[in-house]
Every structure is written in C-alpha cells, then in structure tokens.
Length: 332
Image (tube, rainbow, N blue to C red; front, side, top):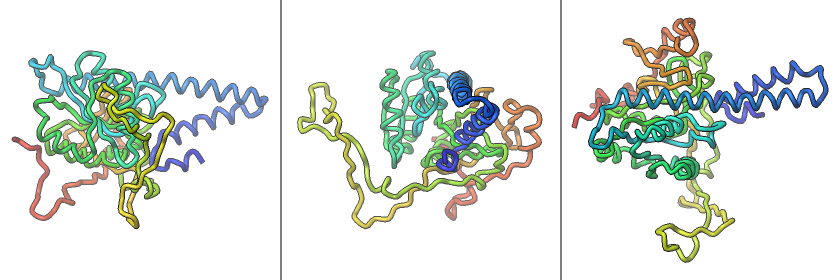
C-alpha cells in the first residue's frame, strides 16, 4: 500500500524495499527480534538522510556562489526562489532544496528567500513558510502566478541567483518530476537568465526510468483545487503587532470556485532536463557535458555513463506557439 500510494515518488519505494530486506533477514527470529531490526534500520535511515541533506546543502550553496556574479554592494548575498516544501517536514531533517537555503543562510550568504504558496495544497505557504520563519531566515511569500513578475522586476535589485526545487523522481536523462508548477518555474528561469537547480539524494535518481515520458503522474481529487483549508481569522483582525489573530483550534474548508466547476489536479509535472542547469546530490553537483547529457558518474560510478549516453530528451521548444522559435534568456 505504501508504495502504490505515491506512484510518482521513488524514495518511498526505495525505503520500503530496503526495510523488507531487513525484515525478511530477521524473519526466523522472534517478533521482538524482527521489530528490533526494523527500528534499528529505520533509525539509521534517519541519521543517513540528515547527513545526506547537509551534504546537499553544502554542495548546492558552493555551486551557487561559484556560478553567480558577486554583488559587493550587498555583501555578496544572494536571493533564492523555491517551490513546495523540501525541508525538515518533507525529509528526515534539514532538507534538500531548503537544505541549500539553510546552508547559504548559515554562511551569511543569503539575502532573501521567495517561496511560492504552491497551490492547490499550499505546501509552500503552510510548511516552507513555517520552517523559514521558525529558523528566522529572511523570507517573502508569493503566489505561484507572481514568479514571472518577480524575476522580471526584482532579479537585479534582490540579486536572485537561482530557483531551487526538490524532486520526486529524476529520470536517467535528467527529466525531473516534482510538485506541479515546477515546470513553469523552469521555463521562467530560463527566459530570465536565472539558474535552475534540482536538489535530491541519489535515491531519487531512477536509473530504470529513461525519461520523463516514462514517469507516472499522480492525479488527485479535484476538491483540492475547488476548496481551501485554514484556521479562522478572529473578528478583531489586528492584534497590535500588524499580524492577524487566529481562532485557536479552528480549521475550516471554504469553497473558492463557482458551483459546478470541474478541475484537473495533477500532483506533479515533469521538467525537461534541457531546462535544468544542475542536479545537486549528496555526492556532489551533477552537470551536463557538451552534448547536454548529465554526468552521473560522480554519483553512480563509471557504469552510469553507458546508461545515460543516449538520453531521450523531451524538448519544450517543440511545443512553443507558432512564430516563436526559441526560448532565450531575456537580455534586458
């Protein structure tokens, strides 16, 4: 059930498979033996995941500072755009994309984080916002539809260096399935000349999946698009601090569409490898060679080169409207 509950994501299936091996090996022992082996393995997964996330954070932060022009007027600090939740609430701790952000913040290299609300389930506004505010990381919430305006008007003034996202599954050719809205951010980043990074442990890279065309995309109930949930705002809105008082313990679901509305609700989309500048793993940053092929040898050894040598690249340029022949960075 756990594996089939998340058909797009690969990490859950990987963890389940590893724990099944542990349980099977201990099957001849007592019930307490099996339980003990299981708990010990799960606790080690926790330790390893946090360690891997911290490594992702370190590698990603270093890559961004190396590839982004310095801004001495702002103490060389950069701003980042992120999507969905990739922090301690989505991992065992620290985070992947949010781990890179935490690493930049720790090294005093972070100016600002712009995080999307991530409709329809608002993982950004609810979860990422909670983590950023808890860690006192400078942050600003934007709606998903504000990303283009943000890059267009504030790229230079805010020194926006990169869009960083997590991943639910990365295909051999680099096509990446992630929370719906990721693909749109990648297109916008390319047009505006902003680096686009995917942050994920090597277990997210599925060497059995050739391209994004082979990734099954989970579709969720339309009610998630038609409604929104949250605590009720108290009648006295202003508590004197500029913040709104909320009614503790309240959780209401409100309909936000016209009655009778039909909604399409894919939980993920696939960003073509062509739009991804680098994939950050715990083993290092994976980049593309002159042919546009991701060099997985750093993560999986020399054998990975043969698997990825002939990737099936899904090119978004083929789907542009008539009259538009290229998606070049904005030079202005």
